[in-house]
Length: 162
Length: 417
Image (cartoon, rainbow over all chains, first blue to last red; front, side):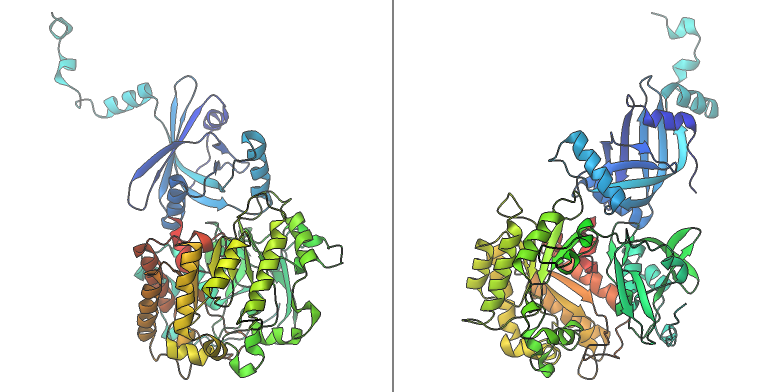
């Protein structure tokens, strides 16, 4: 089931200083991770990004995902090193019509007239989690208090003795 | 609302869409739905037609059997960006079509009250509203799908000079007869050039073109006049491009090697198609008698192999009108027999570098085969899967005839992943 993204997540996605990557999987089950500078949130709250190359592995994997109802994952790394993981399913791709052509023109005006646009992709978010290290450490070490190395339980005078 | 009457008995005899989707988990459900929608056609509800905007969408006008006038979307695009190439006007199957309806504010494909997929209407290019300096509406010069444009150099097919020689599944051949000997049988080159000048002003609109029309058998040797019109049209089109070669496909009568070389050398053409139509030689003679008399199947195949020498591996393809090999009374008696022969011929062609595709047979009212029943969905899915695997086995990419450049070839559409 799709969910609405919180404002802080939308702000992180839309911040030009954020680094955005997308992970997809191929029909052979091989994971593929690429940066996606175009990734944003559209007027309906869906994650939207562009694929410029028709024959790219990401494009193939996205088609595989929409055909076989597979997840894709996006990670947003903010300027202050926070990390947000969004898992979702492809809603649709747009590769013709006015919406596509307007985006095509915008891409060429921004990146140059020798750059193509293959498709616009829209993703429904289904799960969001913060992956910032300190946040995950707190959550996981609270949930699994004994899944740590023994030296971390030792008295400091012993643990750090020379 | 216009009413359709169909016999629903077929549902008791055939596996349903849901059953076929379950039976072939290795194929995308959306692609199986597309195959079935191609096979059964579509019909638009009044609610769906309220979403039709003639200033935006491409429209088809036609008359139903009960004389009701219809103005409907040209066709539909699916969520995965593939295009269904099925006009309501050629939905003349014995099975009831899918309904295109509006549910929860979305345009959707529906069968027996079950919503299967969200779809959208095709949009028209801007040049459709313009006319050439000769007064010809540009939409009559160049036709369009969402990502591909097409040109018909000739309307009259010489195989219909004698009606019994026409291909029996063809709905266009008989309607093209009225152009025989008329000046507007051949396309006007000035109209082509002017329309092309407008077409290339639409950024992001098209990724390729196909030129195809009626066969022309005349000239100093067989099909020489047909070759000449293709060369002239391609040269007129080429005036708008800065490169010698540009994305393009000709689907013609099978030309000989010397003609193919001229077609390649003198134009911007990058890929070539000539369709065998029926893969069994005896059935080819029955279904396509004119073609078989002019160019026997063995020669047709040789010309395809020659085309690979000229255009390159993966730049030449051939198709079958899938299902006509089961037409009554002379067709195969079982779908299994038909598939066996189709795969044998496909393997032979692919082993010579010829890409294989199939077009789902629509039984048109204007065709000699009118009233026949097309095969089951199971046959079409098996054929699609088998032809896809044969192309893969021989390393044949379907780019020249892909989901963007055509959309009517389910096995090639699977190439996307």
